Image (cartoon, rainbow, N blue to C red):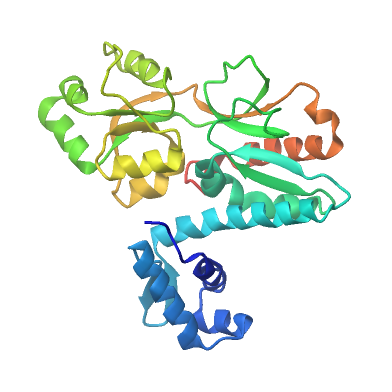
Length: 299
């Protein structure tokens, strides 16, 4: 069934920004009751609560927080595209990222760049396949992996070791059967066909690895995280799922991890000759260096 409540998402975003139905109602020139009604209708359509109703005020649920951050990226992309269609004089710098990285790391930091570089226009392009940058009009992309790509120029942003995660039931199976035996029964989730990350992880864990016909490829990392939470298999994730680990929806399955995996800035050779592209690239490198500690919190 197609989602049909896009009009309510903007109202939700405003309520989330204010953390108040009353303040949002004032901005929207609506009654508080009308805003509350719209949010309850949206929650019903989504199938999960967006806010905790507290004795004094409201707060976002974990899913509400994730949706709000994702909407921020999406609305920014829409507004940037509208500006493009108005034939604004300066071409925006287009950044290719997954919604996973955008919502969990990049989005909370973007206003720092905008304040420091008010002249530079950005366009965040949510993407899954970050291999064809030039063909997609991407100035800069942020890739996950071990940094051994040869098709583009690569600079490391920050290491973010990858480790095996699963639902609580997967951890219980490992505790019962042992790691190697349980892995044989659990479906491995991968980001793309032929990906080597699971092979790398098995080697670090001292386990034999062979190609499996039951491996499930889920290219979108946010969907892959949710599939793990839903018990559809196990996947390699990193510190950006800290909130999911903290609330127990995800469990780390072993201490083994891929220490050389992380996030890398990728671009076509010569892309940084554009001063706006260079400005964002340098800011991103600085932000990743100074933000190393909060990266571990997924902030």
